[in-house]
Length: 106
Image 1 (cartoon, one colour):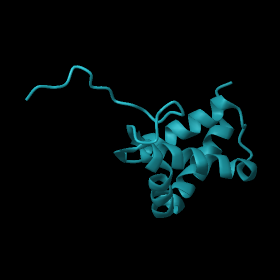
Image 2 (spheres, one colour; image 1 turned 135 degrees about the horizontal axis):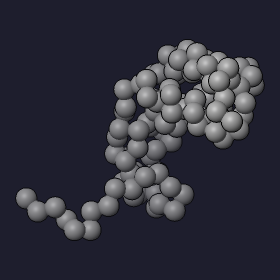
Image 3 (cartoon, helix red, strand yellow; image 1 turned 60 degrees about the horizontal axis):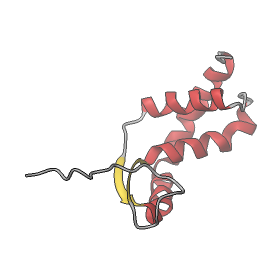
Image 4 (cartoon, helix red, strand yellow; image 1 turned 120 degrees about the vertical axis):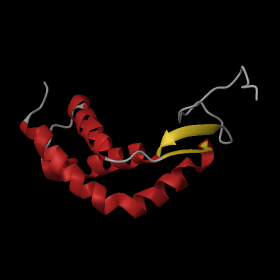
């Protein structure tokens, strides 16, 4: 079987067309949304470094959920995953965000 020479794995981007196929870890968007929602309540520094650190730690503790989907369908797929896993991710995010707030790397 020949692999096409023009094979390109696309990440979600605003420059993609709605019918472009993209590769995404569904938890990335969910984790970022949960961290953003919890920021006012946790008291963690809202700078990009601390938010990124918290998201990275959380994502490293979750089993990846990679899917290929059309760019235009991505939001509805993320919404499904968010409903399924949000409470578990909120518990994990709360613990991680407290740790990051106690030990910021800046």
